[in-house]
Structures are given as C-alpha cells and as structure tokens.
Image (tube, rainbow, N blue to C red):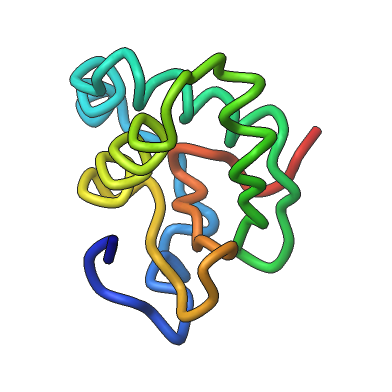
Length: 106
C-alpha cells in the first residue's frame, strides 16, 4: 500500500519552531479512534531524530491493541493525509510535523 507522496526531504522544516495554534487543534479531534490511538503511540513511543521517526509496525500494533495489520495501515494513512506525518523513501521512517508531535521526546 502506498501512503501518498514519498518525500526525500523533510516537508515540515518550516514548522520546527511553531506551536500548534488553538484553531488547528480541531484536526486532532477529527481523527478516527484508530488514528488517534496511533497518534498517541507515535508521540509516546516512537524514536525521534532530525525531524523523522522510526516507526516500529509490530510494536505499534501491540501497544495500540490492533488486531489487524489493516488497522495500522489505515491509521498511518489518515495521519499522513492530515499532514501529521509524511512518508519518506524508507518504509520505516516518517517525517513528523513538530506542531503535532513536538520537537523532541521529553
């Protein structure tokens, strides 16, 4: 399954020092339950470095308690379509939008 455009460079570079404006928080409230679970997983458990995360498919499926692989793919697709994540040329790396994920793990 192809998740939108494959990026070779971080499309969220200009968002690095920006905070999420209150009028954009609606995007999180519009996420499906499955996508929101995956969003929380990405914020809490994903390794972050230089504007991208390393996405561990098996760990995400286990922690989010998804029964099917399709749930993970659909949730990833939704996060990409909402511009919270962006696909990279590497299948396990995703660029993250620091406005939604944060600049670094606390």
